[in-house]
Length: 459
Image (cartoon, rainbow, N blue to C red):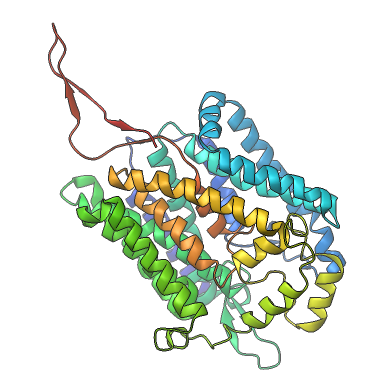
């Protein structure tokens, strides 16, 4: 039965790729580098796939895996080689994204005052890989197709395989709580929260593709994407309801609603309406999570008032912060004596604060939070302009930007190699984008016939 199910799922995945293909669109083979990076970020490390021992002590966690280090270093090197061949596009992108460069430069400088500067610098180098992968995607000649294929390749593989593992490979797709031995579902990931995260991020990509295919439903070529991404959305909803990931489900609904509203309702593309929608989403989320307003919305979504012990961790780690202005150094809080103390207090060995803002504060201080805020504002302003002109990826990237903020209220979304962080970077990165819908401009020149030229819109 297991072998038959594997064959059926394999054929189904192949069918998704076939339905979604566009023979006329072209992307380089280099696009597989960020896809592989995202596949690893959204599932398990190579050492975990090989079922090698996971770190059980603070010292082992500090050292990391040499196999994983070799894999990520190789992908990063390949990515840098690709960008070196795209110097013109890279220079243009870097000039448009000064706030992002300043943020990562500050992260590099912060490794100096870390208790473990060598480890912090290695982690910073790995975090730069997230930026390199996004730059590869957006430096493709056809950015729109590149973003579509980047998200589709990850979604068509991670989502179906998660269902296959849960249903037919329980040793890989399920885990069991200690002592009470109740099962929980992890799919291709190593924990429930990560499974919810990939369902949310990749599900938003499928919502965006589904809405675009629905809008252009009169064309012959859009039926395939409509079916393919509709199927992915059905699988995503089944997974989220099965694993009971309240945060990811809520963010998917909020982000998906934002995408549909902007694309299907012309009035919603006006800047004032966009501001209202974003403020409403953030206000409702903050009220439900932190102010206990809305009639017990958190409990309704399946969470206890302490957010499954998160508030206890927040109070504890904030009390351990030693440098409020600059933090402990990039990705350095969860190392050494602090990690040993926290692991001695919690049997499940936490390695994050389950709050993206607290995580940034602990590692980079108020300066890091301020610089991250500038990155958000720069990206948000660009996307508002993009939505106003109905640019093809603007609604998706705006959803990623806003959902990244909401998700980080109860999860550590702003961490290296987290799918939420990678898609947040995709959203915050400013790049010129071609307008693919609407009537082309007609330019009339003397001594020539009317000529149709594409309308380009730079952000």
